[in-house]
Amino acid sequence: MPEIREANPEALLLAYQKVGGMREDGGENPSTGLRVGDAVEAFFLHDSGGNRLTYCDYEGVYAADPGNPGYQAAWLAAVSSRLQRDGFDGVRMDDVNTFPGHWRWWSSWPPWVPASWPPIWPWPPTWA
Image 1: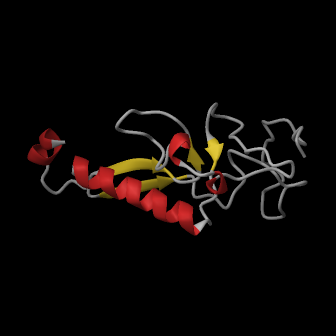
Image 2: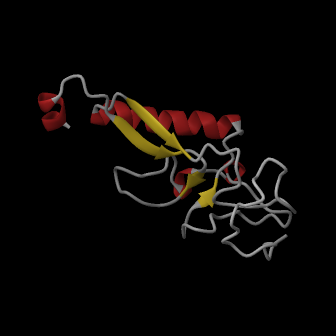
């Protein structure tokens, strides 16, 4: 980072952090705001059987509940600490979805999803 700042002092340096999912990765630099091991069960989304939802296209990523105020506070504390420690200017928050993208738990596509959208995952999911 010092090299980037020296070459371009006006550069805006953003850390990539996933909001909608949690995984165990990255050592001191995880790609998710919270690691699975740092989360309480209420921070995960669950199916009707109580099982944690996972991303269908990224192994080991569990769907988080970004609407949970406790999750929001824990995510913000963890990410803020890393941003300050590493000297980032801000964060690029990924997977704050209103689109089913990585996980699909609707019984059918919402009306706003284009009919031409190519389904690339098995549907309906086996847990539905």
